[in-house]
Image (tube, rainbow, N blue to C red; front, side, top):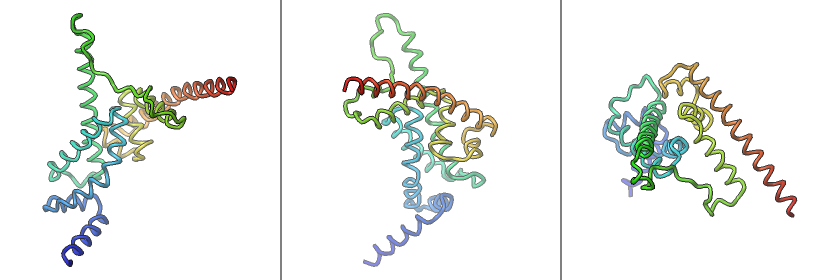
Length: 216
């Protein structure tokens, strides 16, 4: 089947192209080129967004919306910036909008009339008592994610982009739209707060292990 072979060859070749080259081909009508971009970034973006907003279902929706917006606005992409900067900027803007929406919802819930109380205000999903999280390593990872989610939004986003996504300071500066010095300050302060929260976690783990050893 020569046509199938040609299609496979074309697909393999497209995977070797840069993000910017793939985007240019998608603008020319090559839908498969944009699919390669999606496959390159979907896991990384999800990993970033889920830790930012703290909810898997919402993160999946936001990542999907990110790609839809990028595809619809692909002709407006300016080659002066890296594609990764552009796609993370879109994802970050959507995530921040979601967090602002939650804050407004919470404010309205707090101001509800007495007869409306207990009607189910918006709350983040609490996985603390999930029965499937038994292993110590999973519990520690859960606590780390909780610590990250408890960082102020401006610190959380900067720390995630640097320490989880491994982006350089200059690119983070472009994504956040703030000076380089501000980026470094937010990352340093976020790391310090994480260290403080995780030090408490280490104490809890030590006390739990000590108690278990005494019982045994």
